Image: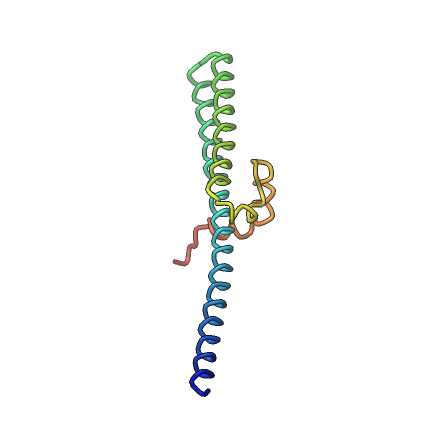
Length: 135
């Protein structure tokens, strides 16, 4: 009878430990997914900012070199079309990377909803993307 009680106590402890480890690992996985979503959206937005600066720079250079206003407007429209395609593809890729079990963690499915999600967590992303001068 003592051996059976010892075995049951061991099994109870073992499965309790496994359960709590599983719950902790699940919680960590959810946090990692949420963090990676925010960081990837932040990096995409930062890249779009730099892309917008390049559009302005290129348009100014075209004006300086006496390009026609038609060519400048064509460049700007082509640039905006490429940017719209990039935004749509980036969000689609992020959404498609999630398996069925992690789809409920997504709080966005298009560009506008992803920017609302990013805006809710802008302090975290700004802190992550900032350059720490004290390193």
